[in-house]
Image 1 (cartoon, helix red, strand yellow):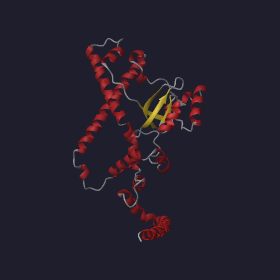
Image 2: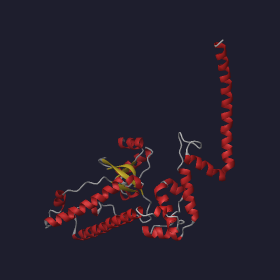
Image 3: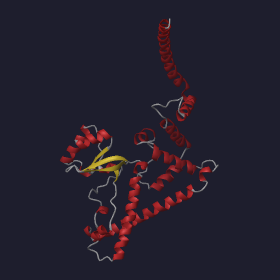
Image 4: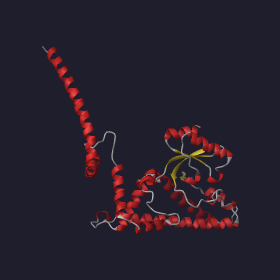
Length: 317
């Protein structure tokens, strides 16, 4: 209940460490029902992507992990170097989590209630639900794995190395482009550039609820596609209408309220002017309502000021 209260007060996601496979367990059902009764949206581990603050590896920890292997000092140092590279990549992901759609969250164990602060991102429901709910192989030490699992673990590490290489490859390309005169290019936007901008807007600026409300079929049926195939498919079916819809969504979202209005803020003024071309009569109707209220108020103020000015004159006699 303390965790629920904290989550509601700080407006953060509270995630029980429960897989869908164990959701029907009596104790887990108690946890789920309590979250629902408290008005919280229930997300299980299958519904979210979680980024934890990584623990920096030490050479001592590496020696302990591989204590049952006849590794030379050079081999241990190589494993340590790889662990440091993975740690730095994970730390980079952790530090940039909020820029990549992740929000603050808490995960807790449904029996002990031990919990930790993490970054959380809600993921789309997969049509092919996984039946694997045991501890991930990546989290187990090599010494605790069977020979078959060790082969899997070795292959997974190679996949991870390739991912890190691809990350660095991409970063180097981006840094190179930023050093060129690309931004100042005077050519009309290409289809690829409009596709890139559309996907960037959708992924980084359209919140989950708006994605469902306005762009439910934005990427189409992507259940059997890789990320690269998703972009290619989007490009193949790309229409400028989608590009325009995203731009108009952003125009309506990136206005400023509070002390900013259509007379004292550049963004708001440009928005107000742009909307006149579409909803001039409706805007005029709202303006008329506010004008009438203002005129009545100002008339009352004039009467009150006139009375006060009369009193001032009488006092000055």
